[in-house]
Length: 130
Ligand code: MN
Image 1 (cartoon, helix red, strand yellow):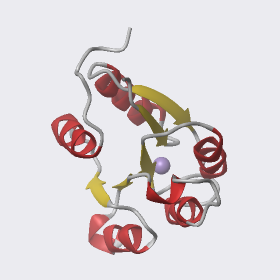
Image 2: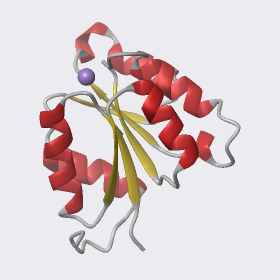
Image 3: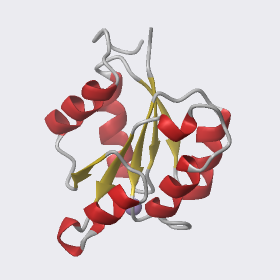
């Protein structure tokens, strides 16, 4: 069964990198370029995991995480969220966890770390997405 990951990210280079990396491992990727879109996609679609950039053009990733965690949609409050932080030294990571994210990764994105963290939450059969 293919797992679906929602990636909320405004940077097209990161989006493409992550799309290629996750589709190569058999995940389906939903893409949101800003926070409001990310929240609404999370509420509308069946999502197994959320990758969340913190620096977004509208509401920030902390607010996205808080809205998802307080959503009335059944189960959405428990969907794993991996924050992707640019400024780990400035306390982004602690704020991300406080906002409801489960773990965080620092930019630049390391693909092996990404695979390991994603697979820890949502194992895949490893077959590439057609
Ligand atoms: Mn960003």
